[in-house]
Length: 331
Ligand SMILES: NC(=O)c1ccc[n+]([C@@H]2O[C@H](COP(=O)([O-])OP(=O)(O)OC[C@H]3O[C@@H](n4cnc5c(N)ncnc54)[C@H](O)[C@@H]3O)[C@@H](O)[C@H]2O)c1
Image (cartoon, rainbow, N blue to C red; front, side, top):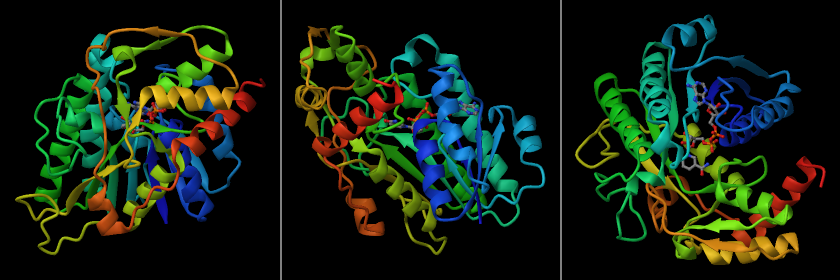
């Protein structure tokens, strides 16, 4: 069984590829290795995978359909985990076209590629908790309306869900969209708060705490996320008349995938301080445009359908991240 993983040099793509390889599956990883954050880190993740003979890497930009098709010529791809994207909320305020290119054109290219792939079985793709925008009904449920994105990033992710819904309806393609909630852990992303805080505290620099610390996040540990991704991959939505989404029998479903525990940002910082054995100097700042105050995932749909049950609280997960961070930077 060959699975195509997009964004394989990225945080979640790397871990997902690793889990599939651990199950003795063949993985083709693609990534354009863009410099949104450290290319060195992306290459280091790839190095961990490239030792495995069942892993093949192709550097390609999936927003270029011709290049994508050429790169995968002759490969029998029946399953795709589409994790490559322009991520990050704040960057979408200054670089909107990167989001249109990778998340809109790129997503369309991936589902169009899947549509034409012989014997295609299932695509699992990344959406985001940010689609809930300014919703205040907590926890966020997949049945809530999500028509008020507060960042272009969120708007592109919601658009991806709509494109997928349409393709599943028209071409009966099994697809699963996953709204990830603040994923963290070893080999994580340098643009996210946990990395930025860790880096600053270790360097004796102050950390910037937005909305004066009055924020809550459903932090989800990477191993729990990957368990959910793989479980979805193994269980494609059936095209048997089931209504996977309200008002449609298309073989497409969307799940929240979070820890189902919304943590105060200030509590996250305390745990980080404990793990580092150092106190943080905090600069309290106002809310950033595009950001949301609180996220909290209702995971009952994925729990009921697939038995998904996250097992890693931040008290366990943050020290694991810190341990990896220090080792990676030889600290
Ligand atoms: N990490 C989180 O907390 C989180 C939360 C919500 C949603 N997500 C989504 O999950 C997915 C994975 O996120 P991540 O944290 O691993 O991000 P990441 O930035 O670490 O990984 C994305 C990878 O995609 C690659 N990529 C981007 N555009 C590409 C293109 N046009 N062609 C080929 N490769 C391209 C990048 O080089 C990168 O390596 C993304 O879709 C992201 O939007 C992540």
